[in-house]
Image 1 (cartoon, rainbow, N blue to C red):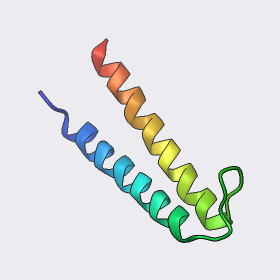
Image 2 (image 1 turned 135 degrees about the horizontal axis):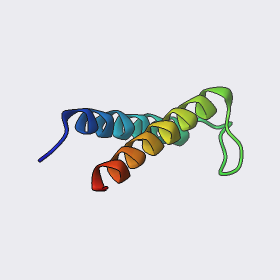
Image 3 (image 1 turned 135 degrees about the vertical axis):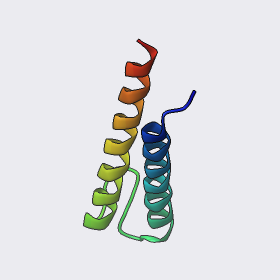
Length: 62
């Protein structure tokens, strides 16, 4: 059985990953080790949502 909150969180985390990836492909200031302010914000949003999703998955397995 799926949890609608988790499914929504998964979609948000995937959308954030896509936004970061698209930005990274077009931004000449972002590198593998440094990010422009927009790239940094997108990356932080992606990692936060990913962590939230994975933590929720772990909690559901208990």
